[in-house]
Amino acid sequence: MASQQASEEAVVVIGLGRFGGTIAESLAKLGHEVLGIDHSMKAVQEYADRLTHVVQADSTDDDALRQLGVSEFSRAVVGIGTSVEASILTVVTLADLGVPQIWAKAISAKHAKILSAVGAHHVVQPEASMGDRVAHLITSKMIDFIEFDDGFAIAKTRAPQEAIGKTLRDCALRTNHGVTVVGVKRRGEDFTYAQPETLVPPEALLIVAGSVDKVQRFAAIT
Image (cartoon, rainbow, N blue to C red; front, side, top):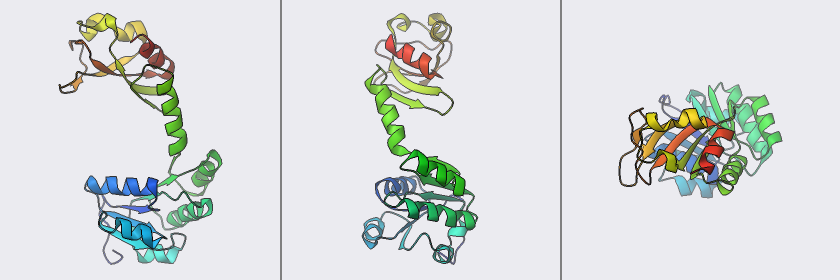
């Protein structure tokens, strides 16, 4: 790996625990070249047949990462969750090597702040994000829900009775409820991108977008 320049689509994933391992395997299934790095030989052996390359190495050692060709990668994921110190030092090392895009997992808000400060371009807090998402689903009628940083949300909900049998133009959900219908889905049929003339059939599922409050209020009437 060190002797060859990484392709533009290649990704290095450091830390092959539950988070990093899942990301690495998903990237590989999507057709990306993946270099997996972990300090544990057990993890390396587990992913040896699943990723393009897997090696045991100390990710806080810039010489080791340089020899592995990590500086040639345009994207890196730091999935280390067992050691905050190792996570931070790995991000510092990747930043020193000039990796253009560094994604890192944080286990707390403070950890996230430090990772951003030392060079991570994208910080993910999976436990916190999933906790917020599940809380919204538990306390509403939404089937699925994704909230963005600016208070914008996308949700999957059942169609309200007022829309059944009407076109999106006629039921005027955006005017009446402040949400934009992105698509319509009926069981057993293909997803339909929303157009003014799109008909809302019985038992339809809607993909809607809008502010968190308006999306939640809309879901409540379904």
